[in-house]
Image 1: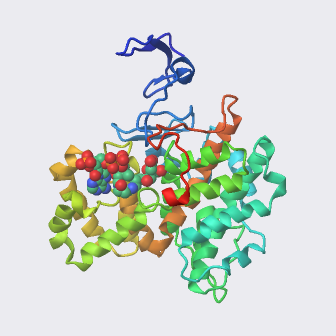
Image 2: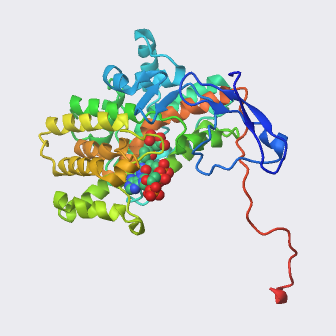
Image 3: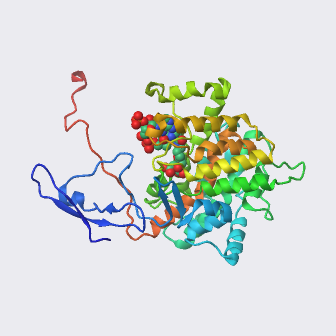
Length: 434
Ligand code: SDX
């Protein structure tokens, strides 16, 4: 709390009301309006929550103007270089980086839960082989609720912890199963001697017919993609998970709700949409046609957006996009694809957009999704699976945020109110009077 207050006065002479201000450890202060309705009989109105803090959190901090992203206070640029994804999972879940002993114990716990119940494969058989992987993942993650009765109670910290480990451990296995099912290939079981990202690569691309050699450059790139997507404060899917869990439902169902929300092209579906946009420009003539495409984007009637650009919070370069562009370069170099036309097209598009008044004026910069699709395509991941990979990585952030909410003694079931603009009370007319 601060001793600062905010006073609301009304032009109609209604009595002014005063609210306390609360300061964070950094970032904007909040006006604590929890007593507003009780004091005034009025609601605030903020569709899209542009000016609304839904909770207190200690997990992730974003400074949109500076283009800064901190996980538990550590800059993403340092975590991406000095840590692996499971270190970041430990940090997001427990608040501190693991020491060598913690790391060994946590990695072993996750590894021990990477298999899924054999019955899970029968859910996949219900889908067409060409089902979108996010449709499959929404189903599979929700279905986990049926398998772990010992970790369904959100209000028991031990059950929250084991369900967190299970979800982090099983997401790669489920995403790889969704991919293998779409390819008509047999599922590959996880291998306990492999790292988290290497295990995922093997489950994705190995077959029972021969040994699979992991490519350390690609594994490192994938691990970095996971780190960059792990959490991002109160974005749409995280807010969905918090609201869903606030009813006391089980963690698997709450995470399934996050998967469903992330699927949207304005959110996690943007990496798939950004790559498809690059394909479309390439098909129309590539770099020579960028000007024409940008003109379409600027034409409000076209409904065309520059996918992978813009962000509700970042009004500067998304720090993850910078790291993703570096990773893109490393992977393309390692694969001898440095002349990849799509990467060149993306850099051309980025350069033009960053100089164009429309984007400059609206502070539209590349976000995490702009380059992630190119990296994933170079690694061999199909476009339709990009958002499932995003969900795999974001699962730890969703869980950490969910756990923080449930552990907060102040939390209540989320139940926003509304500004009602519909018909006022009226009687039902007889059918011959309608
Ligand atoms: C993610 O919230 C998170 O943290 C999300 C995320 C995470 O890690 O969880 O960071 C992941 O979802 C990244 C964002 C991925 N989405 C895309 O790349 C899709 C394209 N971007 C846009 O749809 C848009 O920028 C949003 C949805 C990301 C943000 O939208 P806002 O904050 O609601 O802003 P807005 O739509 O009001 O845009 C402001 C102006 C508008 O123009 P005007 O009405 O002022 O004339 O900018 C324009 C918009 O039309 N605009 C774009 C644009 N993004 C915004 N114009 C063209 N191309 C774009 N990409």
